[in-house]
Length: 138
Image 1 (cartoon, helix red, strand yellow):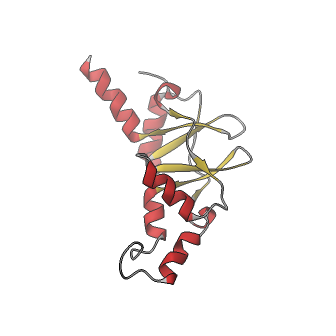
Image 2 (cartoon, helix red, strand yellow):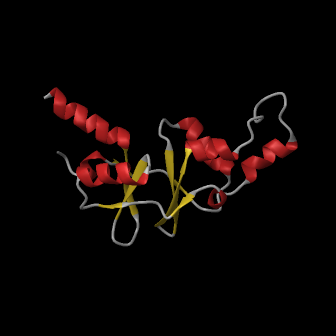
């Protein structure tokens, strides 16, 4: 089984806690992943998912019913919506460590950090499933 560093996505996209949800929305509109790390001074503070974003935004955005109040939801700040103190794994973690975290903590991604809590990558349950599928195919 590969190590966590072999499965993780390197150089994860990040935002700062004071960035607006508009910035987060624009990122998610452009990419195919579901989590963005929240980083300040190179230290991981939290994670914001596409689901967190959808819950925070008005469902009327982009519709004929859109109002000024709906547009104001885009001005909320990341720190108002993010999951603080996310569960993380060290770079020395094994795949089974990630599996345990996914099963125990009900998360869908795990940031991989160094000893100073600087994010080095991110691993999702899909990454684990992909690796298991490749192992079975051999």
